[in-house]
Image 1: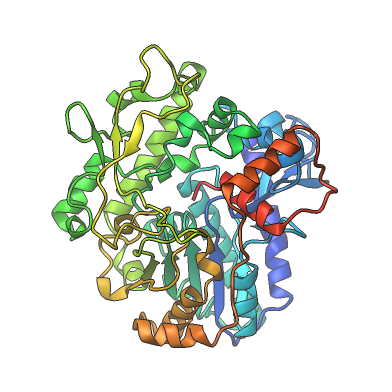
Image 2: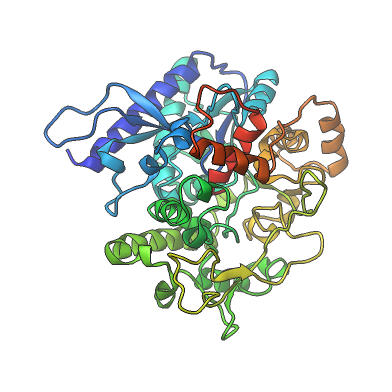
Length: 493
C-alpha cells in the first residue's frame, strides 16, 4: 500500500469513529448542523509510528500536532510542513479530528456548540486537513455525508438520509463546502436533499484574501519571533491547500465579470503590477519568477502543482454551483470595517500591488518587507471583515437576497461565536431566508453570548520572547487571551 493510500485509510477510519460518537446522541427528529471550521480550525493528530511499506498501518497511538503545546514549547510547527511529494513530516500520518481543542486555555467554536446544542440541534464538526487542497477535502466530505445519511436511514428505518441538514462553513471551510457542492453528482435514486438542505457560509474567501500571499515572503510578524521568518514561510509554502487563499486567477475574474454582477463589488482585478498597471495573476506561469526562492529548486514542481490546484478551485467556483446546490446557498459576510480593542479601524485590504524588493540587492532571505503592498481601498464602509474583502465573501452567482450583511459582528475570527451571526444562521435554518437586520439583532439581544477577549500583539510577542528565552514552560498558567492571540497568529483564514 502506498503512503497516500494508507493516509486515506487512516482518515476514513478516523471519520468512522467520529460518526459513531455523533450517533450516540443523534436525534432523528431534530435538525442537523455540520460545521466546516475555518482554516486551521480543525485539530490534526498524527501517528506515533511512521508509515513503512510492507508493514501494518500505524493504527495505534496518536498525538495532537495542531494545536498542541509543542507548537510553542517545542518544534512541532515543523510537523505541519509537508514534503514536495505531499507526505507528512517523517512519514507520520496526520488525520483531522474535529475542531481545535487547546484545553484548558482556548477552544474555538465552543460557544457555537453550546448554542446549537441548547437549541436542540444535532451538531457535528467536520474537521479537515486545511493544509491540503479543497478538492481533496471535498472528496472526504462527500464520502462522510453519504455514510452519515446511510446510518441515519438505518436508525430511522427509512431512506430520508439527513432530512434537514445545514452545512455551515466558517471562512476557509466555505471553500471546502462550495467545492463539494460544485462537484456533487447524484447517483441513481439519489439527490442532494439526502445530504444538505442548505449551505450557509460565514466570512468565506471564495475569491481569495489580500493577506495570505504575504506570508510566503515575510512569515508572520508575531510567529517570526518564535520560529524565524524564512523557516515559517517555508513551512507555509509546503502546504498546497492555503494557495487557494490567494486571489482568483485572471481568467476566472474575466468570466465572472462577463456573466455576473461581481463588477459592482470588484470593478477591476484585485492584484496589479506597479510597473505596468496590468493584472498580476499568481496563477500565471510568468509570475512564477516573482515567487520566493524556496518555492523554486526542488520545490518548483510541487508549488506549480499547488498553484494549479488553487486555479482548479477558482475556475470551478467561477462556473457557478449546479442549480440544485445554488438554490440552497446563503452567505453571511462582514462589510463594515471592524475596530480593534482600542477602537481603531482594522483596515481590510481589498487589493494588492506587486512591487520590487524594497532594498536593491536584498533577497527574500534577508528582507523583512514584501514586494506586495496594499492597493487602493474599496468603497467606504464595504472593505470587509479585517481578513476577507467584502467582494470575496459572496459567490457572484448568489442573489443578494440570500446574503446577510453583518451589522454588529465585525471580527472575522470571532464570527462563529457572535450572537448576530448565530441568530442569522438560526433564522435561515428556520425560514430558508435571510432575516432583516432588525430581526437578527432582536434575537441576538436575547442571547447571552460573548467571545473571549484576545491579548494585543505586543503582549503576545513579549510572551513568545519569554518562551524562547526559557522563562516560561507549558506548566506555567497564562492568560487565555494570550493563547487565543498566539493560536490565531498561526491561522491562515
